[in-house]
Length: 351
Ligand SMILES: Cc1cc2nc3c(=O)[nH]c(=O)nc-3n(C[C@H](O)[C@H](O)[C@H](O)COP(=O)(O)O)c2cc1C
Image 1 (tube, rainbow, N blue to C red):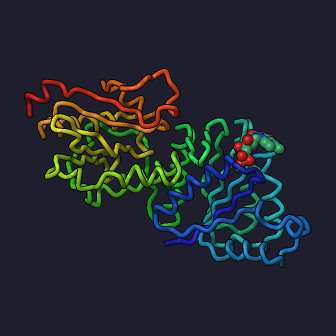
Image 2: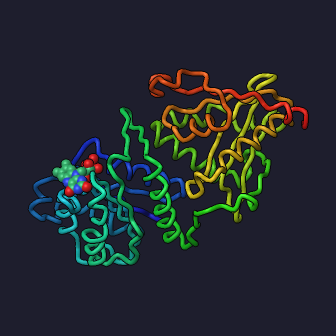
Image 3: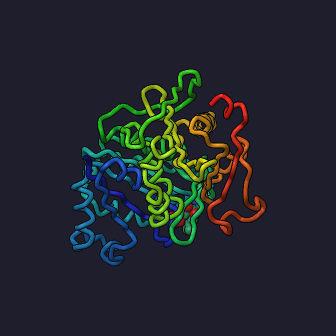
């Protein structure tokens, strides 16, 4: 496992750039890597401005960088460049401080006109510091970042999908593995399988849900969401089922049901890989879960989704689920959003 240093270089609190970094950090940790943050605004200002590299706090930050196998460098775009805070820190570092390291540059900015900041401003200095491999990097528009009180974060899919892709590519470089390609899925080649909840093939789904929930709702709520229901509820013996979709040797989507009451199955753990979203895989998972519920003798499906999962709510509305709440109200004021769906008669008869 790798040691990864992250560099946060916004002077602001809260910081949108830090929120993006937090999301990426969770993904790195979910792969088992050790992540050590360097928060530049917390370094002593005067030694930083006076170029005193021997200041203990600054030397400690440089040592974290030196010990790292890989580095995530993040910056807000200020005045069409990376932040001044990052500049003063980089100026203090030894000439080849990034020698042999894999680097992922990330930026946030207010206008797409400055999307090239990573390439014309940041990349050259990272190269000059000796970085061995500099990932594609990504620029996230600040309007695509929604911060909530209490630490929750909702990224627009226009940001989260490519951010996921560059993070996967960074991880693949660190781990010496092939980049997992996204792109168009051939529906006919997608295989649906019913597995036990502890099947290793379900691991990507469960790991990604932890990251997603903790990013969107903050750690405590995320843990509650995923621990309140024991995995044993999804076993056939308990009246449950766990469905995965396989494509190209990968788990690309999945979901589960459990007994809610004698006639109702509750849908849980809905997930689609970021690399394969918006291609009907969520619909396919719901169809497979509906068939599994019919097989188990249920007459209807019930589920709740969180108020910060607009894409999930959209999927349920598009697949015949009836919202059991006021759809004109602000989802945040409701909390978990309940939906129900009667299982079509044809499926019940077929079962
Ligand atoms: C002083 C200042 C200068 C900025 N200059 C730019 C700019 O030139 N181009 C741009 O796209 N955004 C600019 N922005 C917007 C920030 O890059 C954007 O809001 C960013 O997400 C802030 O990140 P933070 O919350 O981590 O500080 C500027 C913001 C500030 C405060």
